[in-house]
Length: 122
Image (cartoon, rainbow, N blue to C red):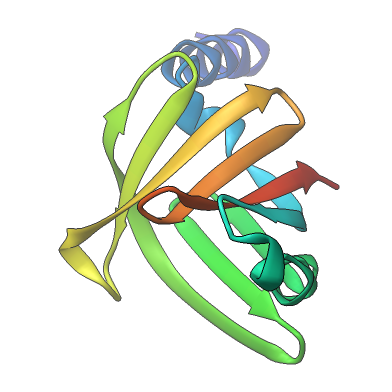
């Protein structure tokens, strides 16, 4: 198999493997706002949300807050058309993180029951 054909096969396999929602996480996401909080908590929650960034690259996820950054490997626990659930090496398999896609450029991370942070793709 010549080199050009081999790269075409690899590219085709990568596209086929990345059709789920998990592949859509790839990239950098900037916090926009908090949802599901009471009116008296909204200002502080939105300020907190706006300082967050998530970065997904391969099997690594990084959470940026101000000057702090935490990174960990992750794996997909559940993948559907509009949502994906991951677990990280740092938090373990019992601490599942759920992300729901509003569209290709907007996700919500469910941080507590009924409470989420909305992110936009950079």
